[in-house]
Image (cartoon, rainbow, N blue to C red; front, side):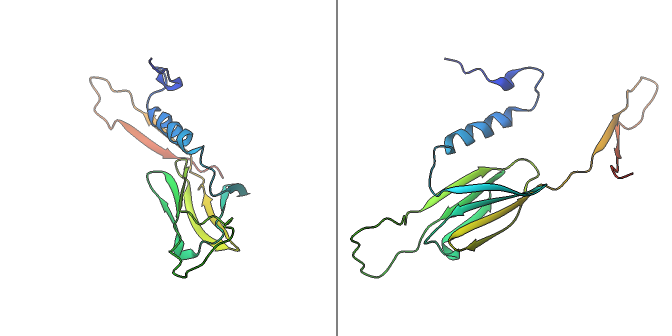
Length: 153
């Protein structure tokens, strides 16, 4: 059976990467550990907060890999000979991935009271207009010229 994509229209050129991103998001959507929140902290800022009780700063890793924010946790082995009568605090390793939109930058990460906060920001791009020159057989000029527009003027 052939899968038909919304992005297969001949009018949507260059959007095949969006389909791959959606497939990645769909695969990771079923993960439930660790729980997390995503909040908007400003007009162009976000914060992802993960509940990482029992994990120290050295047990956690935050990286950006191919437009994905990847957060990994792996606790160091407990060397003591503990005998648990009940073990309800999760001590397993995890990998949690978030697909980042183009232009999103990770500003920092910190652990506070068992919560890992990762701050993200989307810088405001400066709008620009590109004029494409139409060539004729008699004119030989550059193919295009970029004009920066200052929205505050």
